[in-house]
Length: 212
Image (cartoon, rainbow, N blue to C red; front, side, top):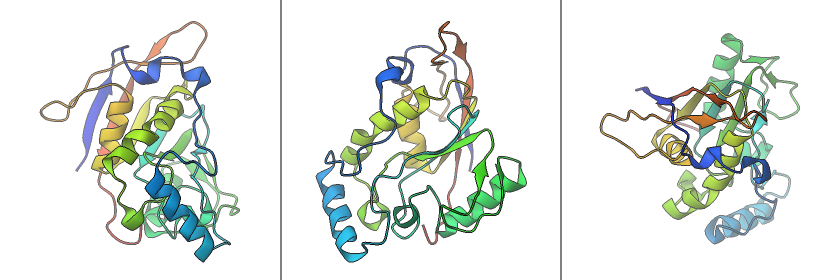
């Protein structure tokens, strides 16, 4: 299932004050106590893993942003790069390479030399949640970093949100209320000096059900 949304209106959180926003939390971010506790337990059990909030990957000047739910325990939480090391990443990066949004060879590790082309990948929640299920409060708390990611992409034209939660959090980051039929209109302000506006499109896609 794919839901398309068009952004055309200026009153959104992502259009105000983006220059001072951080696109990623600190390594030891304490904002979500449950996630911080889980992160520390995973660090003790697997000290060789990344085990920190996973930053966005790719070009901030890209026109495409892909938003996932959260790092997978043995995927991005282990490797430190979104969708790297799990089944969802195998599918995602193969698709990006096929359609020209990535180049190189995906080898499921952050030093494989893969680069994104006109594209950036991030998550609605930056820290790995227990059982891959962030709580609503955690999604809301982490949205400030999604807002900053949106605001620091001045050429953004399209957003692909992988799954319902990523889609809903992205829509909220843009200041849009959900409507019947999942159709939204909003204008996303760029960070350019002349304060021009750009029109972008959101697409919600389903995600693989194994190995994330």
